[in-house]
Image (cartoon, rainbow, N blue to C red; front, side, top):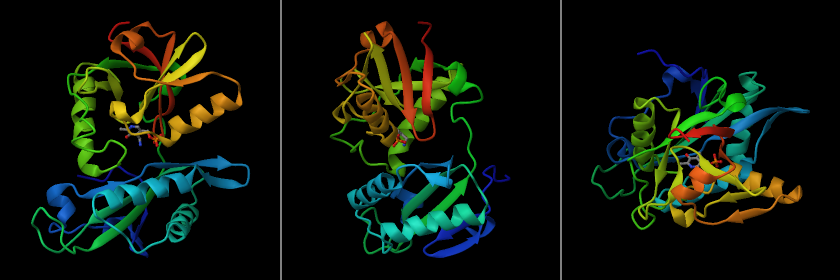
Length: 271
Ligand code: PMP
């Protein structure tokens, strides 16, 4: 099937190759066990040219996610920054999405990664409204899915690992199969966790409420930005668990995420 991502170049371990030549070996450990980690980053059309949003924080999370799964790579954050900059400029993009992936490559193929090769890939491409055309302007319709978010004692939700996303794949496909734009997962305690690829905020009595990572969620860079902007503007914020009842009775709700940006939630299961 034809690739549907419009990316012409890929950076692999320090080399830039045409996208069609960016391959992964079938014998890579990550293909068999999901041992790869990634980031989703956006670049915006800034006053002085393309500007990558909070890149140091994303690169820090990438390194921490990799370390969690016993991967360390030989490139510094300065080298990865330069690689990303180069890819954006060479493809003449003003605004784009940036996707670094660190994967456990060839070597032994037992479950325990031995001294397998660690490979770093980066691609950039144009990506509009993640939750569909009109999502940012009109809001989205969401459903609380049956698929439960994994618990922190099983997988660390603060780690952005490829294998963890099987949970999100199930959640979003379930939501779409029932005619919704996105699914919200509950955690193992029956409280709200997050969307398949977004954090959740409620507005209640003029204050912003979002839940802590212990409720089983990835504490997003966008979530952090929204909290900081709110504080700067004197808008009250509270980090506390969110129940289904809180969600249904909120004055407003919205998703935050690099891909989803700030997407209003128009409806939750008919409410
Ligand atoms: N939760 C999940 C499960 C996600 O995939 C994302 C997107 N990375 C987020 C939250 C939001 O994180 P960020 O704002 O850092 O993109």
